[in-house]
Length: 371
Image: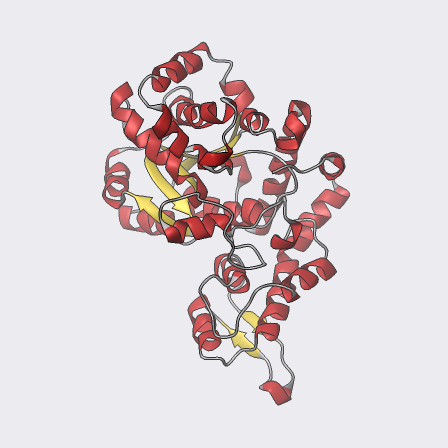
């Protein structure tokens, strides 16, 4: 596969930011084995952003010959006091995440066996990890570290304990200690994690390591529309995206992989979806980033008096029709609900019929979700 095709796959939506494209091209031209990673605090149910969007982008990266690590950040969930700081419950939720990704991988024809799973609690057992952590902690100021705390879903004003200052320093350490201590070439995380990736790029030359590439994918918008939760980024557009993302701690903003058909329809019917508006429209986003990665055609069912059924064969076609007012929001919502349920149904079924997955689901179900 040539470099241009690999570039196309890696930068394909839902990828939203590449820092930098020239560095990525050079990496593809000069290095045989390229390693990327994404990390996840494990707490609560997986929604379509955490599960489906991650698998969709993972498919592109694997096809582009990127060796990818999914990092279970159990110690980070503990630092962030997720699930009441119960580390055993956090780790069971990590196992649940793996089951969710595995089930979604089958839906999108991804060879999940090619993905490496690594755990924070195992990585920190290496004494070299803490040596590097201390070295990194001497290269940055408290003020610079505080700027990166928003990656934990907290504003700077919310930082009351040293644990949240440790958080970005540990995440930076992960970047250089993953892949058997050799570090990763690509940090491919959500837009809400960009600050720590930029911090790692600043740290790299100070500790004699190559700068990792920072690639950030779009965050699925919450169903209730744009909102302001606090100051997460100085860039207003990025700040709004982070503030408005789907949240497992706010169930009506998200569609979970366990939601049944009726629940999916209910949530989408109540979703923010202004007529003719594409920007910040969560229903449009589901079609754009998820549905058109599974289906070649989306059928919009309508009565003849409203124009009859529509067969839409690309997102750009959908965008044009919707922007021109030729598609009613309710018709769009119903179609998105129907197609999304078709994707989620086999994942739901996995957690119903697979004994291990069902047990993990019940454990997570009984846990209290904390922000």
